[in-house]
Amino acid sequence: MLRPGRLTEDSGSGMVRLTVARASGAVPRDDVAAVVAALLDSPETAGLTLNPVSGDMPVTEAVRAAGRI
Image (cartoon, rainbow, N blue to C red; front, side, top):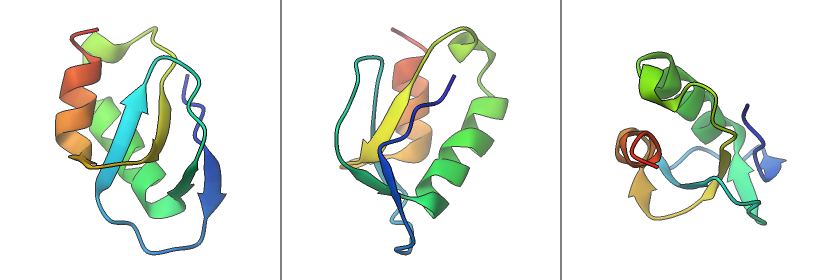
């Protein structure tokens, strides 16, 4: 399950913070779409509830890190 922060229309930066704990903050829709695409290639994240917000980690790296939780 994906529970993004407040969605914005800003251009995506490709940088997020992805946590299993509820995260507050905003995130561009583009970055949420990038997280969804990266999750499709990450079966190790199956069953996790992830909370993306804007952050300082590249999307692919954040998804990889989430798979190790």
